[in-house]
Image 1 (cartoon, rainbow, N blue to C red):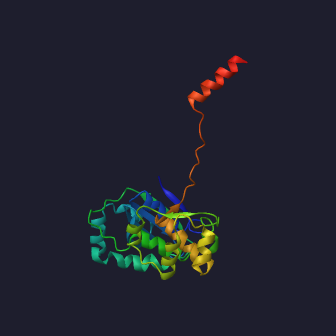
Image 2: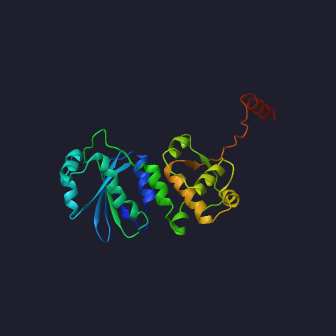
Image 3: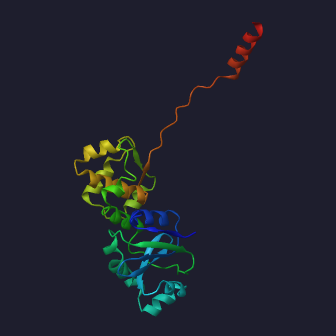
Length: 230
């Protein structure tokens, strides 16, 4: 199933979250105003980027190793394409994107220079207030750290502000509490929470269901006997 949309309504933090969650492999094609760029995704991780003059050219190269050989790019230099064609465009909103899964064959040893969690956090730092409000709109929300939070955090270079916000996520504080105790701009706190949520570092805490005491069979039998005696 193809994933398509417009960056004005679907930001990179969300796109990467979807691809990472399902560990998808394929090509994310973005038609920017000035160029078309193909972003190669392996099991949810962005590993390579290249501009193309025609969209159909992306689908003629189905073997990733052969593609690198044709472009004369070494695996240890792949991250430079991300530096050039992805990171400077994280905050842009004018692109149209489409993701096509499964058609390209990757080697097992394709390196990942930028973990997806790191890219999601970078993207979240550039979100507009309107974008952030889509997920962090209710200040009574309570978040807790995910079971694998430490493993995910180890892949990210958090800012000092983000570290402080994360330390306040404890499963009991509301968003309002975190904003107040963080003592920083609201947008900074909300961007951090948005990024943590998209990267799977935190999750919404579910309300515990209070089980009402059920009537016992013994008591029910006694009630039925009383009714029969009336």
